[in-house]
Length: 286
Image (tube, rainbow, N blue to C red; front, side):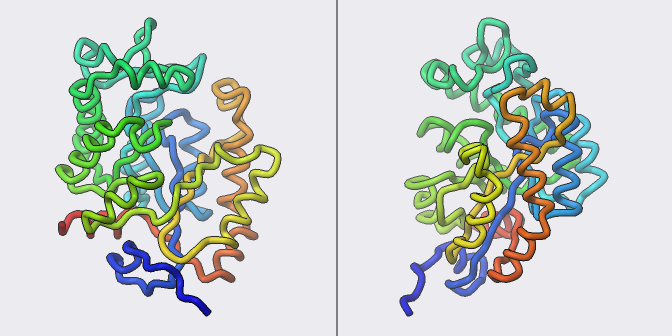
């Protein structure tokens, strides 16, 4: 039998090369009450091992309170300069005059359809100011994040934004998510642990086959570190109003993370669930 390809992250984390590692990260903590409640339940009762906090969102204060009450819930800062909802907006934590290139005509962050416009005009120094404001908000609350990642922007959306985030991760002694090549290889090349495979985002799956595809991903998980970004949410009136076209994705993710079938697949396949905390420990020693 052929040996699996060498996993830089397995070696850095002290696992044998053939070990199958998985981070189950719940994105969008702080967006609304239905998401906050679902993520906490998915961590307490299910398979979620980590979450990512959106500090500019209306329910971020509630999420921060939950993190203080549940200090064993590992979390990262979900760096947020995009607002995908059409009837529920958020904007910068930095003073608006220092974030003008990040804002649309209404004074909010751009939506997904306007990401190309955002990337074309966003000034790097203003992105840095906003990213720092979001990280410092978390730290000033007395919380200790494990990593940085982005909301709706793969690898930050631009090379210079990725590099900026990398420098911030090192400065603040945090780990960092890389979505795919060549960014994963960049972190590996620095002797840092990161995902070995492209991130699986539940919003990229076929809505009609989402649950089955998530189960199959567990069965097919390769040796090395994989990450699944899930987005649990309660199917409440609040969530259906905020996301009328996609709230079912979040409900299905909650069902998946609470599923006895998923837990059994993980047991049968010998998959080890991790948060970003062991990755952060290696980053801190570099």
